[in-house]
Length: 294
Image 1 (cartoon, one colour):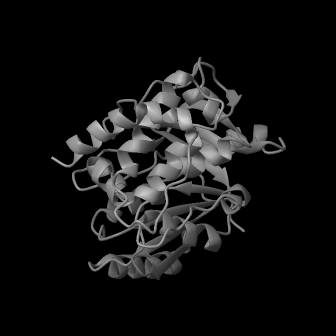
Image 2 (cartoon, rainbow, N blue to C red):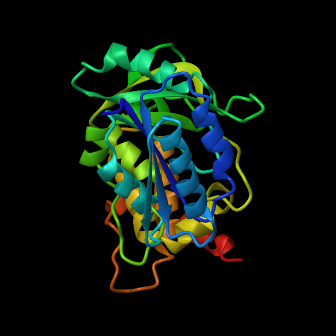
């Protein structure tokens, strides 16, 4: 059983996977497997994956598992990968990103300090662009053991930017992504917040992930994607309103709840209910919704 499962959900990103694969070959920590979950690609992703599997078997390198599924969205690919994973931890590595050579060694080092904690979901490190520029603020203490709801959204929470959460496989299986019919997207924060409401992360100020935001990726068109998956989007913001977080974040969540609730065209579908007083922000949400549609 490998220590960590690196899970890559991908869709029509065959050529972009090559730098990722090269970064995995350069890792100093070797106790891992790579799961490629192909979410119905129509390009040459399968040919790339099968050639790497053959090469790695021949050269006794790290195991690679290629899984092809029908297109359902990144969250469904993650769910499938989590079910298939053999590692104690899961690291989600997007198809256009890479890992520093010491990434897994650093993760293993910090996980050893916290793995016995009953309320530990895993570890969390920093992301940077490939040019080395840090994404976000980093943590106020190093190491820091805390719930992500507190360090991101509480009154004194001041941690911003993308982070790499590396979760226990058991925790990921406890909190799968909801798969909603006819919706191809579910915000990752919906599940990360559910985990954070029960568990904490062991956080450290070391870069363990390289990311750039490429044109055509999910990040570049996130508003339109959320509009096309309004049930998952409103579910995310409705749950934020029930967490013990700052008023600033609750107001932002209330506005976005209404913003995307107006995207529900099928009257048979129901957004999750929120308390009556959050209707105070309905008009702002409507204005943002109208701007989104221009």
